[in-house]
Image (cartoon, rainbow, N blue to C red; front, side, top):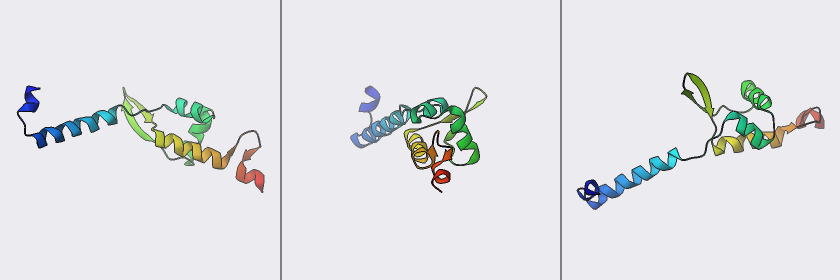
Length: 101
């Protein structure tokens, strides 16, 4: 508290807002590829196939202990869910576009 009192009100307020924004970013919910697949109701292999073929854009990737890890955020999950709803028709012999023709 002593540190905060030494600054004028405006400076301490901006410092606090910056700190709260950084804290908010760090507590945002993220998901693994397996978790995303489970959430949207497809297998992990199906989701990876969509990623490799470019049907779904890649989420942000980070190096974690020498491994490349995908970091899925809520907007990435909703983007994949939307793709699935529009294009994937499980058990019907392929995609919706192919089966409707």
